[in-house]
Image (tube, rainbow, N blue to C red; front, side, top):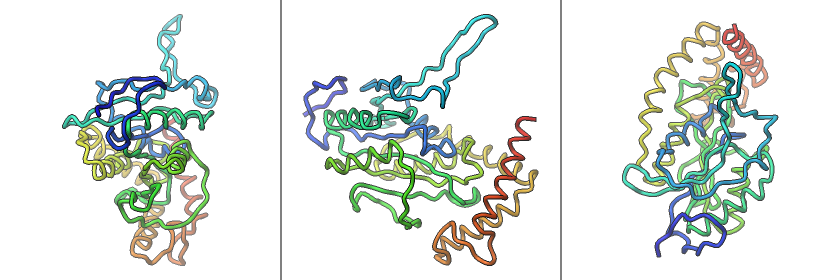
Length: 299
């Protein structure tokens, strides 16, 4: 049975597993290094078909995340209206996929999840895949580390080096995956760990790691050449800033900690060792490092 992307709650439901994969990458809590936003930008073709648009006006905290508006001489000329949409896209081979992208809702999470669930059922989505990023004490000089997760163990397609059990603040994406699992839908995702000294700037390597993980799982043909071309310049600028602003000692400590962790010599990326700076010491050093960055950017 063919599926179609008509909007509305009265669509005929398509048998589960016969529709396209849903990819969700929201700009919000899981947005370190702008990795999810950068990845979603690569997944947008500019030729997609709108499937569903959320009433973001009731879900968005305008005072906390003020949209930009352009002022020209004596009048307001252009407003960057935030939108949250599910769009039908096609990859380089014509394979369809659904992209849910935009600002993470600040309010009405359950309504947002219910509407997403309706689309998943209506279009027979076989799998929902979330893309996100969090800051972590990792160096940019090592390959990006990814934590994979899913609603069933067999949906986790790679071994996680990070095996801790922790309670963390939730996100709309995390709750979406949890609810889908409760309702019997397959859902999985990837969280890339971004160097926490780069969490507030665009960090292309993290976005590329998410794209690569998505391609490995789904087989989609995604052209990320634009993002790859930005990676070299971004890393070169980071290296220059760290050297100029005295961050080499901090970087060296993170590299030692990362290497010890990946060898299995440390239980956590937050573990301390007599030869490594403690978590508190690293945090203090990075606060000083970031303060110098902000001062340079403002001055």
